[in-house]
Image (tube, rainbow, N blue to C red; front, side):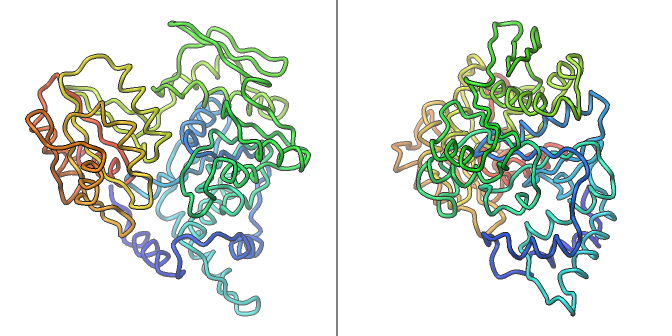
Length: 431
């Protein structure tokens, strides 16, 4: 379902308001948030990291919902509709609520006595989701950081518990050239005297140092919490707490136990304020759903949707594909932003994909399908009898070609940008 004309008009208008798409500073958005008196009177969990943020947020929302709490969840970007970015009690924000919030923000940011403040699309829409959450009066709020941490609009909120899921190379033009630089940026979602969780098994030293400098209570994977498991079940252990004999999470993939472990650490830290039973944990993990994260659709040929768009995520996707068993041919529908490490992504997957169907995307930030084809050639991938390389104007056309060319025993992997996976999801729903 498309958004209402009123919401579409607002979103279009907000996109044009600020001269930059990304403007890394908190001063402007903090000023408007203060005018709006944005605050939450319940526990807040903020989740940052290079990869795994969305899955960790989904685990938290699902477990807390099973425990009977009313949860507000903020994530970004969306796959199909803007409303996916905000949900309360597992329902997406209504168009009318967003329009009302936008009107409220517009009045606050253009206040004649206090002066006009310019906001980016992300800042404006983040504030709108926060306003709606305040009206909903949640029992807990889960917030996904957009990019980095230190200067992300989500970092306006002082989290009771902050999680950094993983630290790897992405958005280097904004966050710095190394894992150490990026880890320091992400660590700024931590707060003095509050729980700071890092789910990365090899945390950057600057992240650890920052947490110690500000006096945060740092929980490290492998030191303060851990997991173990066999073919049938897994166990989690934290600081003086254990959760045993759990079924594997509903979200598939090699890194999901790391993400689930960080979520369980956060819930352990908040057990006095939002206690969850073992039953709620088990059911929450089992029923968690998140489109586009190694999402395997039923039917033949198998279709896998994954928003892997950097080398770290693509390495995880490669491992997950390896664990699926034998398929005669693997077809890829691939579209990417131009500012991503496309060479690194291809390198992780090139031995696992037979046919490459490359697509343009409907945004100026995207690499063209022709540019992606050049990247394949540079990686030594050339068209031949068992390797098709074709370019398409949009993901739906590329997916249709894959479905036509693949046998029922093959598999089709749609990956890369959220635009790629979102367009494929929309096309599949229409089919």
